[in-house]
Image (tube, rainbow, N blue to C red; front, side):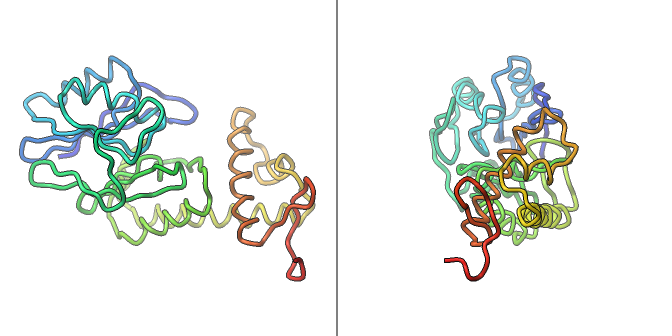
Length: 256
């Protein structure tokens, strides 16, 4: 059984809020991504565990909308806390890497290391369902820290051939293959748009944002500046763009 609980932390970046999942098998439960420390949400999780034996608290990554409640909840329930590595307001009792597993009841939750959104990001596989954290979200793209890692991680989860995606934000997605393909296509298209902007004369991150994100609400500009900077780093590493002083320019075959 999979029960999704919505944390009351809606925002521009979290959408309706953070999804917490209670996974149950044969009377045992794991709590995945308990979210920020909000008393109301803690009580909802505790209520969902009534009559069930909790055996662990798991986090996909250490962002403040996913992990801070993990250690207090683990202490309250008397169970270990699982994660890739320690981070702000989070210290795992058990570190879980790529291919690691966490047993509960008759099932096992498998960790898939998917860096890109953050270096420590994990998705978790349960049968043909993938819990994606912030690697893939319903109704939105994702802010990333490493464009090359992120694209590689998208290819990785595509090749798992799962049926259902359970995201950290938004609703379930039963058309997993189509969603993952659309994420990959979006990233490649964004690369093309940035290259076209540079080729057209945009030389700074700010002017590239103006071209690529035309009409962007002012509240999202900071995120767009970050995204373009991350994407440009990949394009420089790929040898498609080079830095000339403080300007970005297209790298031609004869450049050395």
